[in-house]
Amino acid sequence: MLAQRIPVITLVSTAELSYWERTTFHAVVVVGFEATTKEVWLHDPDQVSGPIAVSRGEFELAWLEMSYLCATIQKR
Image (cartoon, rainbow, N blue to C red; front, top):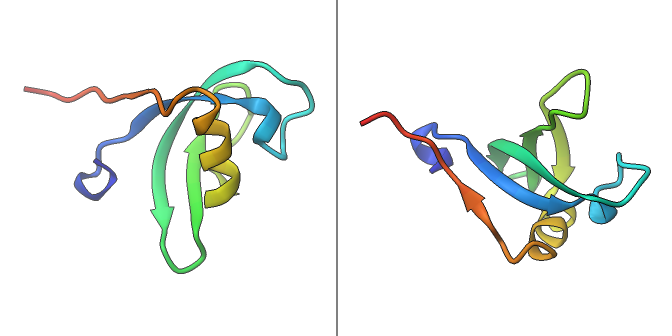
């Protein structure tokens, strides 16, 4: 989806995200992935600015906690 420039809404556990100070279930929008640095770029509605870069491992652990649930919205 990202290769087609379609953002992905993902459910995550904030316990695995280093920039979060408390643990909760949360939704973020993944807008990019950088293969060379292995960073995932996401917009977090709880943060003032974005996108935020997190490591692929950090993101995948947070996403795994929510059974890799995600959604996309596309125009027909």
